[in-house]
Image (cartoon, rainbow, N blue to C red; front, top):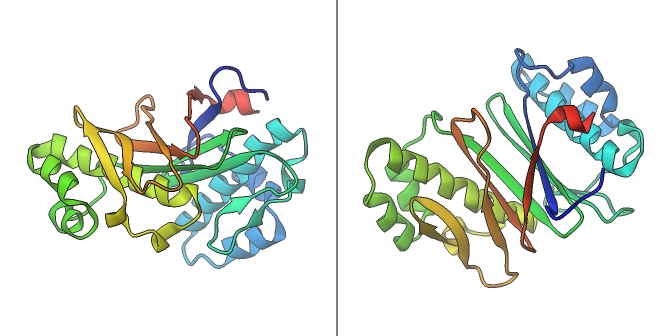
Length: 229
């Protein structure tokens, strides 16, 4: 798989029991460590989502690396971000309930996050704890579903930024300030270093928010899993 003008490929899939991903095919792609982790889940629902998401990530990478999915040498950084040290390829994934999203690029570090709009959360309480004054002011200017959707767009923008450098919660969400235009996050004002770019992903038939952060300018190409093999 090659990249054209669009330097970043995004895939999405139903990783639930009603989806098209074959559980056994995904299981066979996993490393021994991933299989061991899958075995530690208490409930089949969560175990199967993990297997499908991680197995499909490997199958996607296999199309770029021309290698068997179970032979891809994925390593894990000290804060948990996966990487491949032997190849100049960057990837990340996220899931919310049965929706999984995957991103691949050769242009630089990348992060992705997805959240369904119907996830049960306390919007007011969480925004007070994790959002900047500017972001809270924007939220306050919206009502109803528009306000709730903006909350999740901001949430995914922050999560993607935390994932792009592998910092996770070591990067306080209140130290990430997102610029909002017409009810959508469009860029990061803070942190200034390293400078990251933001792209929001509109996925067909997805009632949720999905954001991509990169240490370059991601130009997105939304691909189907049929293309990934």
